[in-house]
Image 1: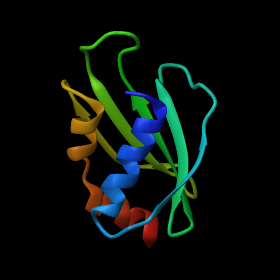
Image 2: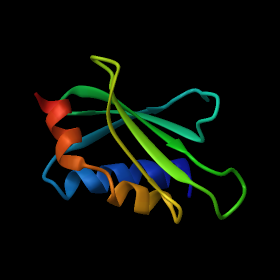
Image 3: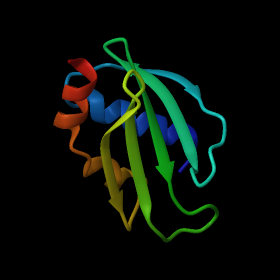
Image 4: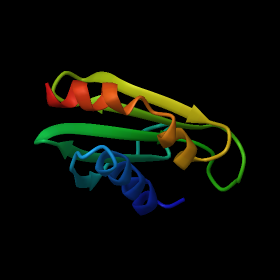
Length: 101
């Protein structure tokens, strides 16, 4: 799964809940993070970190969401199957609530 696919997965999850995700830059490489995506929900900045295997098809796929105003983690999920499954398991109600209050 490419960084663009991961960004699209985040956007689809927000859109399915009637919220617009505005993509920003893909971040500089952070140690132990496969891909970092920056963006905003209702003008509020967020960061999504995707942790997972590089160059292999199995392992643990984790997604962490951070509110960049507070630097707090507002959501996390993991799957042994894929990043899409990890995104499906995210508590989006909590993520959206934290980002839009």
